[in-house]
Image 1 (cartoon, rainbow, N blue to C red):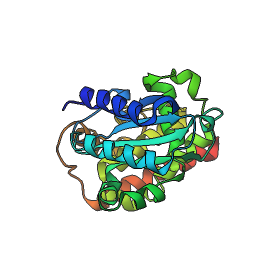
Image 2: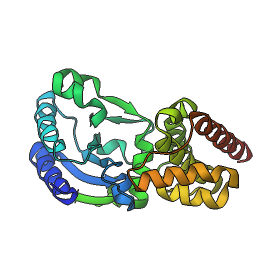
Image 3: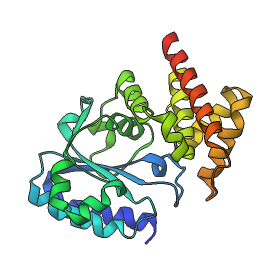
Length: 255
């Protein structure tokens, strides 16, 4: 099943699950930003509903998502369901009704009721998701995004970006491509308020950071666009993270 067929099925399954309670379905992430890579990217979706969901509704919906996720690319579907009232004005950290991603796949398959109960609360990342929807997102079904989402405050979007990098120095050894590109796009935002994809963040960084940082950025960009691994040592990765985090902190202090 190709990505367009997955999106069509997702919309159909979500309509059937939520009926008149459904406000809309919105695409964000790399697919909306034009830099989707089948082996490196999630299919990122945000579902907005009018009223809270019952456990029975969630249980039935999870079954549909699990079935559809089997046909998705390697990283699978990542989606959250939120209430319309929390999107305009945007509430940070925003509450969510339910969440699904490949990171929680085993939990949903082994004990879906427990996963449904645990995967609720608030999520600082939603500030980033809604910002991307506002800039690049697509309305797949329902009310136009302009009517559903308010602008996310600068400090809330920045909080979401920094939250994603809390353990960057340690995480870059395990996932150098993701962390290196994330550092690039965060620096682009704190320095010039540019809301960029990971790929575009790397392109920006190659023009705006010191040349001795370029080899790691080029390796990360090549890894993102192909199936190759990054050819850098853990020490090089940590040194890159240290320098980028230092630049981010410096820019923030100047604001």
